[in-house]
Length: 458
Image 1 (cartoon, helix red, strand yellow):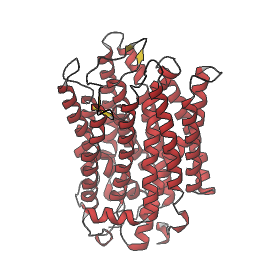
Image 2 (cartoon, one colour; image 1 turned 30 degrees about the horizontal axis):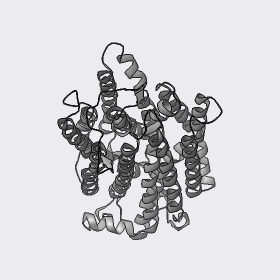
Image 3 (cartoon, one colour; image 1 turned 120 degrees about the vertical axis):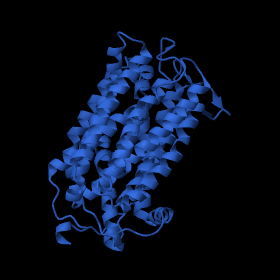
Image 4 (cartoon, one colour; image 1 turned 90 degrees about the horizontal axis):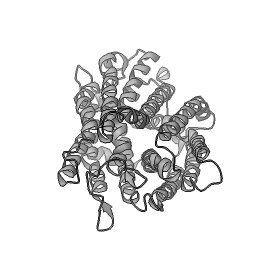
């Protein structure tokens, strides 16, 4: 059934509130696991007690790193299975909303339970519980995120609509990141009348509850039958799941895009996860400056959204993304020298925030818009429509980058922490090298080879 009603902008806003919800809910696990389990050391004292051993295994990785990396497998399998089911579902409740509704409650719940160790000291029980709750978190997140992302193309009537939707969800994602980054301030408030660990756990629980309410908005208020484009069954390829994935990776544009996107997340996750260490250990200033610089970066990126929208039409999405990669590389070079430059440490932090503004805006808006173009291109060329599958591959590749990034970070952070801090500085060098590789891979993307049609002309 082909939807003929052009989706109004207020529906895009309601949809984007779901992004704010999942962005806020996942902030804790994606950005604070290392902070809680490998805490910054202030004056020789760790911020939190040790719950899981930091000892390395075979000198290569830690228990935490191994658990985080291994959680990728159930996450990836769930994403693909949900994508396959979602694309073919005919539920009267909604082919996307049905799966979002299944995942929303455990997603919010386990985002808190990941930070709820069983015992108050180092224990294998804590490691087992951490692994179980982390796996459950990623599986339930896949149930919500995979169909949610597929709705971008279902709601967007053409390339411009998809760009608008992606601008909205980029703003709400950034708001979620901004609110999440205030966890250090909220923790400081709760800490005045409870232990440090409990203060952090209460802050995380508060954000997850708010995120849960926001994630309900698109489930409750968006009528898929009215506003989403449902493609006829002949547009859904009848290959099995793994054949479809294999066919997707045969397309050079799609392959270049998703591999470079995974590489971007491997690099950028370093800033998200390690920012508190750059502030506390390299610049030797209070951890609450982490919230301040997060505010500066995200407000700056908001200011760049309109220019990014304009420039993407003027110079093309590819050239703008390449520019963002270059600035990201420069930012990591700056991070390596934080605390060693002959200017105020706070000024160094602000300069870093200014350099990162355009990359945040560009990578926040354009990747989903590029993927939407690739989905439409395949539909126009081959008559095959795989929105959920394509978005699930992108999501899995993104999470692969994040998981590998966390694996590397867990291995590097303890090296010289509180003394030479060589491990913390090394995270910037690794991320800089990775960003350069991402730039090279994305250079193979051929923007001129797409066949896109506006719905009004079809």
